[in-house]
Image (cartoon, rainbow, N blue to C red):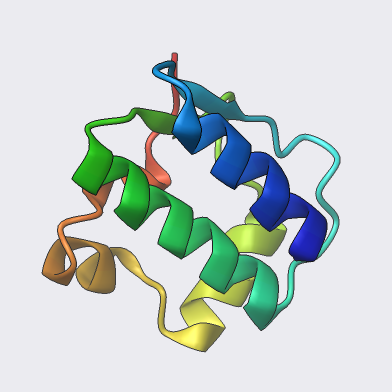
Length: 87
């Protein structure tokens, strides 16, 4: 999660869209979910675009639902784009 956080923070400092490629993601833990959620929230506040390159990996969806990071939570925190793809 620490390495992901550093990469996302660097991306958020630039005025460009961030596209996440989750094709090789096999699993994600709570710390990783928190980093992703925080990046989407910060990006939204800064007017930056963050999206998944392809469909959100099932491992991320499953972990997110178990942790309470579901679509209803995304709506509540105004992060509907958390589940969106770039294409």
